[in-house]
Image (cartoon, rainbow, N blue to C red; front, side, top):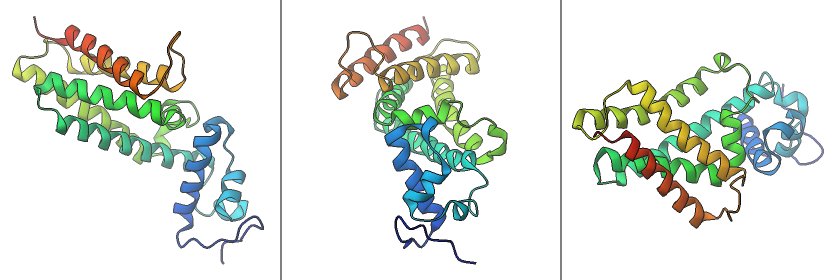
Length: 208
């Protein structure tokens, strides 16, 4: 049985699953996760609502794919930032933090989807769980390396990692939502705010 083509736009894609993900990603950037519907996603992809269900069980399954891709994108950007730093574990930690905040400011709706309530049951989406875990592992690895070199204070790696993640994630959400009072949140501001915040974080983590 062939996918039913909607009247809005003829279906010419060779991979409907990929086309639905692309359409959902485009709409996500426009309206945010709360306003997304599978019907509208299918219409934008140029297929019927019923055809979309042949590839995704429900809207949450499609959103989980987008969120997983978002975690992978953020992970790769963080890895590149870490690899470009030549300032030891503390420099790599700062670089990863700046990359995280820049990602949130550039992709606010995607960050909201990745950490918001639109995906209720993560246990249904093992790929999403794994992608999030890989990002956490990158940060934990930097903290572990810093402790081994004597640059970062002693303490439970999980606690230190969560503290570092909480700071950069909170700043990313503030920048993404333009919620920083009195600030014009542009690219230059995000870079400066991320640099200042991560340096304060590093001072707190530094071994005395």
